[in-house]
Image (cartoon, rainbow, N blue to C red):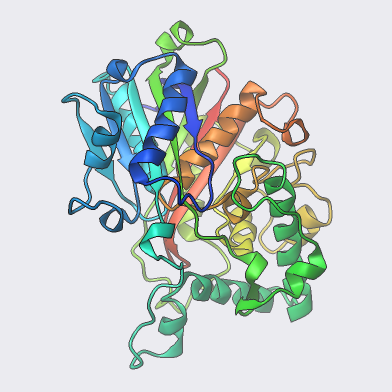
Length: 403
């Protein structure tokens, strides 16, 4: 019979690089930087690691020796003949690395493992826009072939469904971006450390209407890593460890854009993953029980729809319940992305899922670098990461908390 992973696996060390345009480092440098911090945080040596997983989303473009593999990690860390595996699930790769590592511990195959998420995007020339489908496709498919186009479709659909004028809709998105930059400016490891105003966001250069420059995450380099052990052994490493309360990844059939019943204003896969993670963690009312959510806000509209899709507020009520009440600030009722999120902290594709867990880990320990971001008396948080596009997502959800 299936068993829950709740409280069986502990995270005893984590590391995260500076995110940004890391022209000073290649992918192996980033892996070493994040892993070294995680190992030192856990008080272990690389020789103590019995297995490892590395998540990357665009590995084939950053490995000079040929097809992508776990060699990028084993070579960087000089591990000696232990199993190291590369995992990939679009932007969910970092979550996949953590999930695989957690199951490696829960299965009792290993006593100490390493999970890494990494991406080196700047040197590949990746601009985030991708390639358009050939002209024979109708405009819907053309729009959905680029990330800004996909999320712009979701934004316009949301405005239409809930009766928001273009100005009202753009103002809501601007308020989300202002919050992201407010926290990114206070996070020393964030990529975009600059506050903005609602007026700047509303009037910024247009990328794909209604998404302007400040509605979109940048193209970023970075890595994050975690050391995991059985929960019963965690106190051997530290007192302020955290345990995994729930883990879920959900994929659908991928017919959202062809399904006439789908209106682009919710993430069906995220809903299902949230249900599984909440059940495993024993959470009945996430709005009241969760104390922090780090979610996948690659665009401002993504934060809005993900928040509603994880049942943190009523569908269509984001402005009323979140922006007007400032509920999603660190001192609000339901803090969201107080790290700066993907929008301001940065989004190296394979690293983001692990980086979100890093934020919650530090928050629970009370060790956030900038005290103005610290949430008081926090004991549990949720990290949500997803790859794909509206109507065809691969979301991952990890719930971690104090033991």
